[in-house]
Length: 200
Image (cartoon, helix red, strand yellow):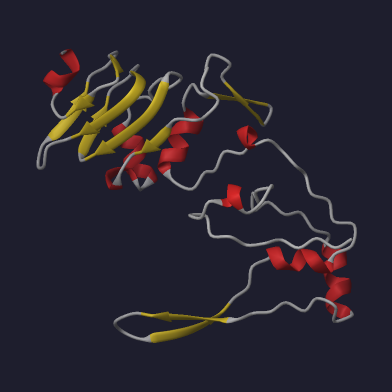
């Protein structure tokens, strides 16, 4: 039996289309790849990708590794629960992994049993946190988020040390102003635009 890997854009709802999610993690034998090339059995389709901008038009040749699965014998798929798959595509994901929501022992990621909600918090840190250096500089320490459901951050927001965030949080700095969340505060279910909003 041959496997085929279906490539679906990340922004689509994969749950409606597939029972399994591709974690983009693939292990292959280099000897097998060489044998397939030598026997001309590895025939990948490489459709041209057209990329245009204001300055020039470039024609790229590219292919995904996923479709190559169908050419291999003895393919094994490892099924893991979604709870064990944590993407790391943005600094919002990095906040989850560096928080008290997860621990890592001997390379094994474990979820904090104190988290009662089966789902991870939905975190959107906004453009000020896109770069790793900015992310690191804006947090004195990573907040406790075991009790967090959602967090939206916009504008020039800076986090102090030993902060706890719970429930649904929205923190938006006013245009042109720096908003510093002080050390040691516990904030739950609030929309914060000013330091005074924390003390209410």
